Image (cartoon, rainbow over all chains, first blue to last red; front, top):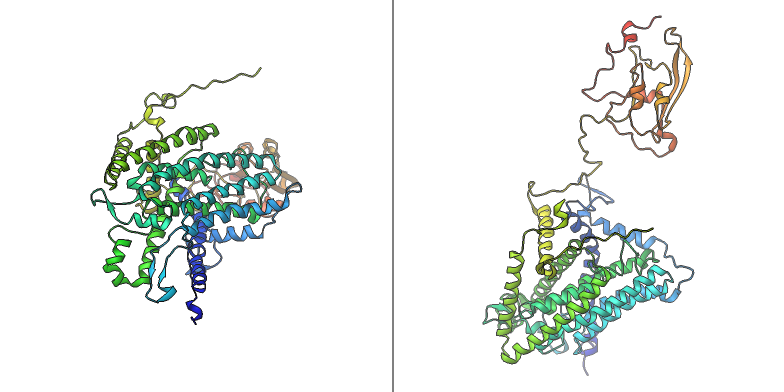
Length: 414
Length: 185
């Protein structure tokens, strides 16, 4: 008779719960909350302002304890929770209440498949011997991620429809049209990556990025093998998160957007959901293109097998180190996304559709074709990496060597 | 008839239409500002914010500020309740009640002199209108905030209690001829 804690089901339930608390409760939600603060302060500093830094509720050492303005997050949360959750009289009450949760939950669910650390080889024996730091290891992997991403559109679409308000409906329609258009590009940009690594399972994708490529000079990260795919994916994915420069469904200055009728935490869920989507996108980008939790030459699965690090750190601290690397990569990607929002002006809706259908879609098809040809010629990825490096270098050169200033611009003629 | 304005089409070069290099240059610029303001030295930081109650902007020397009433040497207001200022006032914010003065030369004194700071537009026309140099706008202070609309009406005593900011002409001077003569008791 086996012992209670040797039951695989008990082990799975326990580890999954712990992993959920570490990843979602301990990382994603706090990071999303902090991002609301970061968005304000980062934009402020980019625009030579200070941003929120005054809220406090006690004084420490004779100074108000503002914690860099982080108390504002707390104040906003309190405000959100205690305002009246108003429902319009003509709204479809049930759908109206469920809609915020749909967008939020689907974007959190994507995180279940993201490997946030190495597989732990604990030495505890039996069912506890091998613990992957990934909540759900599913073979469908990336396909389910894309499916959940599409499901997230329902949050905006249903909110817009159920509000029974014209502006909200317009926002919901925009969200669904935009989501459907960019999903195709989003899926196709990843095909090249799937061809390179031959798996849809996310931890397998991370492990495949553990080695080196380009004759051992570069880490085998997706961004070096598929630079075009990475950029196209980033663009399409930012469009999926409905953030600037693709924030047409919100359109703060024209229609308030699909959440115009929401107050209190209903709106709060949309806002927090948007930032959870930012975290999710960063985590996915890290996993697919930036080698996940691995740090080339320092942390990696190939090092785990033979490595001095495993002996030196022990399994748990090795896992912690991987988690820290993963968290910092995700954080940097979040910073990049916030800065993109505060740098670029918004698209017009026809420009948005042009970009999705006439630019991203053909380019991702070209990317697939080129990747396929290079893989057929050279299965070792070396020529693919060389071509990727060529793309990066050419792009950097074009960016640096571009004209400093517009010539003959009407605005300059004043 | 509605006129349709056709805006001149901007011809973008192929480099600009490819969009991506320009995006990265924009990001380079805004990231540069961000890090220069976050980690930079005093020279590279260009934060424009003034943390208002803690820090205050230094006003230019010609800033006037709130009005004050000037007093004679004995402390009584110079004002002779002639209503010139309240007539000149475009905002109708000065309210004066004239009283019979024991001084035979001036005849009147302001029994009440109130300025409604909520209506005042700080134009300074009252100062120009005054024949007695009894009202000036040289205190350099903001009208302090208040909770009730009634508190916005500042009376004679409060107006007399204010003093001019440093560098303004003295309150007791020879510019007022009647004062130089003294009050004829």
